[in-house]
Image (tube, rainbow, N blue to C red; front, side, top):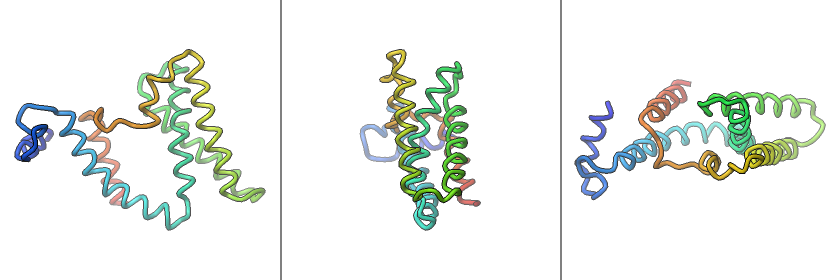
Length: 160
């Protein structure tokens, strides 16, 4: 499947799209083409449900998930990121259901705590810089396996 994609991109009139060159750019282009409708679909649901700050907090909690994965020796950080984000979402929802404070306040506290805890845990051994790409992102580092996962996520969101 990737060979077909690379052949199609080779037809573009850009230097980075010429045959046999810069596969990372071709992968990044495909990632952008899949992320765009995914963000459109999910972004609409998030804004309609007034949960934009909630999704921001979950995104930042991924850094703590990485830190926990590093501490536990998990090689695939995606597992620890998703696991911690799920626990984080349940915790936020549980505290919000108690109606003790406004949702923005609760989400803000959880968001700041998630980022701070992740930075502290990753900085403990002096290795924070090598994990900062997970916090900021690097579209040029996307692999064919991650593109396949992104495709499944896009199809699942479209079906939902």
